[in-house]
Length: 326
Ligand SMILES: Nc1ncnc2c1ncn2[C@@H]1O[C@H](COP(=O)(O)OP(=O)(O)O)[C@@H](O)[C@H]1O
Ligand SMILES: [Mg+2]
Image (cartoon, rainbow, N blue to C red):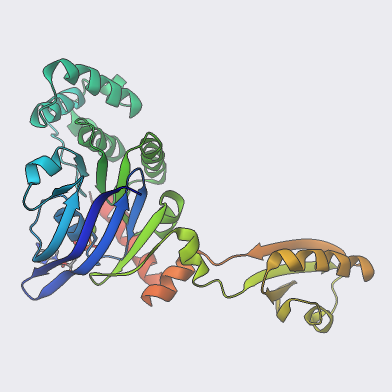
């Protein structure tokens, strides 16, 4: 697989603080790659180093075959950057912002109008192209920022928490746009502190905590790290005391009561479900419900980082407060 971005031993120290601590990662062409971690984990610093906005204390960063430290101009021709805070100009129209970005990136004059029009259409902003960006909603502004980052047709786009602080609807629009963008072949490097978002979007996820990458794999493989056993929940009618009998079933290692259901701990849910159906038939019991539950990425995240789900929940609150303030 072709590597389009690479960090080797990448490190950033701010005075006493080790913001990013010897990270190694490779991003493959056309991949949707996620850097997931709580507040202050080092996500922004990592993006800033990979995109040449801040100099690493040590280590190597390579993007599109160019060393970002020694060949920053060449590298930046192939890179799009969407920073945490929108970098479009409020006093200019959406159209003028894109034309300005095109000039800045050296897009040939003949191409500028066509590209601006295409992007505004794709991002649902064409009707509003003449409006001052200062009058845009947060979600529209974020979309315009992403459009501006694409004007020079980069092969990889770095996005720093692109949905943080947005309402649910705007966040969904952005996620769909990013999925489409990725489907069209653009490599995406996204940071987020939303476990759900990383799970939904990313083909591979690096989990970063206190400057260190503590896991890097596909969401499914990360979940498998905590997948020691499956859980199957089943309820029967009429309700009876069946623990003993259920425990006797093949492949079932333990049984407990949860409300009106039996919770079965099993090695493989797909083997147990037919046995439960037979069990119901033989005992003249109707199965009211059967649910299988697999570990979530959140379970994996908690196990890997040792952070409680509450930490991430608190961060979500911060994000919401940020929105009401801004
Ligand atoms: N310019 C800076 N000067 C000093 N410390 C910084 C600076 N930028 C980031 N840090 C520190 O580096 C750590 C990582 O920050 P950051 O990369 O912004 O994390 P994240 O984006 O994951 O929230 C934090 O402890 C933060 O306070
Ligand atoms: Mg950040």
